Image (cartoon, rainbow, N blue to C red; front, side, top):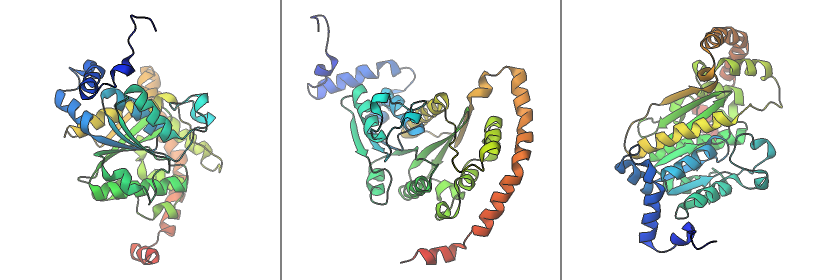
Amino acid sequence: MTNGDRDPLSETAQGPAAKAGFYAELTARNAGVVPGADQWALRTATVLVAGCGSIGGAAVEPLTRLGLQKFVLADPGTYELNNLNRQSATVADLDRNKASLAGDRVRAINPHASVEVFTEGVTPQTVEKLTASCQVIIDGVDVTTPEGWRAKLLLHRHAVRRRLPLITGWDMAGTQYVRCYDYRHIREPFAGAIGPHDADRHDMWELLRRAVPLRHVPTDMLAEIRANHARTDYSFPQVAYTAMAFGVISSHMVVRLLAGQRVRPEVRLDVHQKTRPLGEQWRTRARWPVELGALLPELLRLARRAGADRTPPAAADRDAAP
């Protein structure tokens, strides 16, 4: 290091005044966009990010750069090579826990940040601690396995109990569908669309059908589902710009919620449609009912099977009782 170089990290380790100065400089360019009261809310609040891979991981860095200083991060998963097309990791990070690496990224940006990491993810043993101190939840829990759905439902149930706003998202080809369940006002997980035992009764497709209104599923995703829904080895396509769109939208939602402002319960951004020429946009829209019609027989079959499998709530409660 030359004499003219500064070591910013050494300057941050000099007590409260230096820490305050670091924060002020870190967030100086937010001024004019992030009001002072909102910045103070970011500085003092705690946000839980449950699931730190695709969408959850996309929210961590913008929140840190906006000035959020207290994180609770939870994810039981480790990075795989097929994650690198969209998640904030490198080859050197393969096999590392996602929550742990997200915590390192936070501290690399702001060494004064408080980060609590739960490598067990959302479980009956951890969920109380995860939700105890936070003011907002970002739900990026995996939806491709029954275990992931059970963890997601557990998280939503505790958000209801603690009356916490929760933001989640769904990658669908080039579309990011962001949903804010404000459980300060909503009194059932998923606003009643998914019941407490549904993760054990229904497969991934039926749960997704209940969670994501069909009107928000883009044309290219309907075609993808129709071509692959019968495959047992099928994995949803996910790309970087769609996952990053969740970070963009959800980080601003967090700012508003922490500042006591309202947000829209649903935000949908179709990157593909936004960038297509007008004629192609209209052709894509015209294909939507065609693709839906072709998929409809399978959707009806799923709905009939879901109805046949449904256990009356009273019976389910009796079965669950010790």
